[in-house]
Image 1 (cartoon, rainbow, N blue to C red):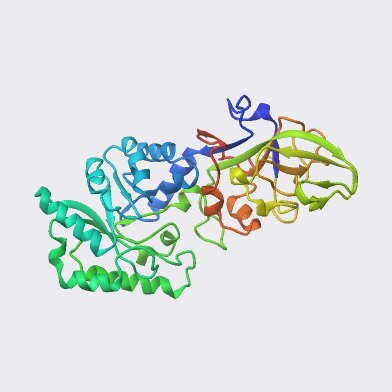
Image 2: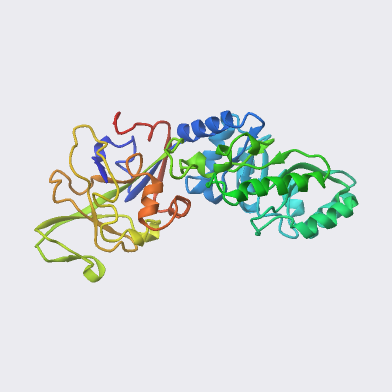
Length: 395
């Protein structure tokens, strides 16, 4: 865990009353989107901004990507798309979870494309097209192995045998979702590709969308007309087991609220799961599991030897700061005995270039997706460029 004094934080943070802050480097997110675009020359690259842009803030992230030229956006829910529509003029915007019954006119009024994944949904939209006397643009989701959403094999056969069910609908894109794209040697990837090709051959000609974040690294066979990365935009490694090719666009810091000295043998926090082996100086941070900082990181999950952490403040040098005791709802404690210069109001970095989300999530027994999307609203967000672009060598 790296440290940095409040006075050296980004402008405005020191006066912010929040006890935890998340720096979001919008330039890094744009850079990731552009890099993924270079990896997908066969077609456009969308931005998946569901779940509040994976916890980063959907409105500022989507607006910045739109300003950079992104013209295809996906959310999960219609409500998410409705909130973003005013920020994305002229862009394609679609909700992946499909159109709830009765939401057709909301989609039309706000130019949000439905993602149809069942015969009943297709029938509702075709009926609306007939009632309106015009063709309606839609996306069609075909399930090729995920077995969650999308038109299944039986539904596809029925549709292929009755193509008139699509009358009045303009297929803008046919899409599928890869099951194990982060495992390049998984034979399921090739099997899904073959199923998708067969499915598309049963449908009217339309642009195709295959690759998610990890799918963009599976090679040219998985290229299509539209890629749909999400996690990679936000610095989650799309190539597990290999070096992360993406820029990390975040830093999570928490403020020291109070310091106290405890004697050897004294415990810290609920149930005293950690006891001091020496006289120790304990710092209490204003972040806990109600903020999305996992309770599973209780004890010493971030101690030296588990996660490497490095100082980011000029002139600071020393060992990592281990977490000790139980992570509680609002507070986390750490041992700063070896850092006598730290005091109340100083900040400790919990995630960032030296504590990547993938590593922190692994220590908590989860994945970075869950960790980032769980970061709560009490964590103040700061947006800018190059908040997080410095590296260990350049800090």
